[in-house]
Length: 309
Image 1 (cartoon, one colour):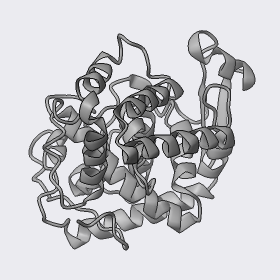
Image 2 (cartoon, one colour):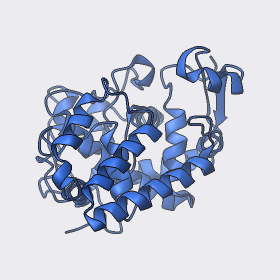
Image 3 (cartoon, helix red, strand yellow):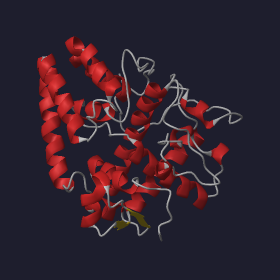
Image 4 (cartoon, one colour):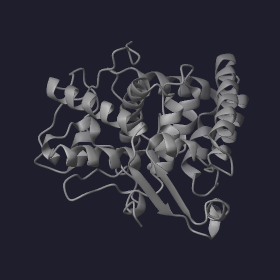
């Protein structure tokens, strides 16, 4: 098994661009490496994103004064603003807590989950998984019905299932067909659990905000270099949320949505690609992958608005 070996290599066959961009994501790694052109383009994007860490690109968005974001809105006078990704990370906020507090909580949850998996304590794994869902604000019984049902249905072998999910995503050669929505599932809830189940902590939490932010920077990278849709590496076509404010699309670059018949497999592939990329970017700018992830999480809350709005 090749687990995100160094230097990172990005896999996935090239596909003709005579159909929907979704086809690019329907091709899970099959042992063929991306072309040298694609690998160079991805390395160039990693360097581009690393420069954005210390860069001065402005980004801002309005935060609703009502609902679950009301406290956050009051804290920033209704508008979140950052200049560059490092600044975005410094302004991280989740449930009224900054990056350091949330990182400490994540580390504790990760240690507890990994210990429970190692001990094969199904009851503890299920309990901690639900605690992670609560931390992420994704523990609504109705909205997360599919995830709750999957955990309950697989309770007796939950340690094995989560370990398998981690190993499959980290093995760059492994097909992801097991993520069929029955055997294994992957969504914005499960990505949090699987990320914390990884003993090496190399898997990022890929949700609509992370996908939106990555797409935002891919679009800027493509525009500044005049790269057209059909010349963009498949591995840079990060699947996006259907929510309008999370869509980073431009006239030049379009991204597939993170839904459809193969949504679990697509989401698992996004976790793989984003993890490889963010790990490399973190090395480039001497930050931790969690810091890069936090910056993208904040940036991706709204990528549809102009920075000056």
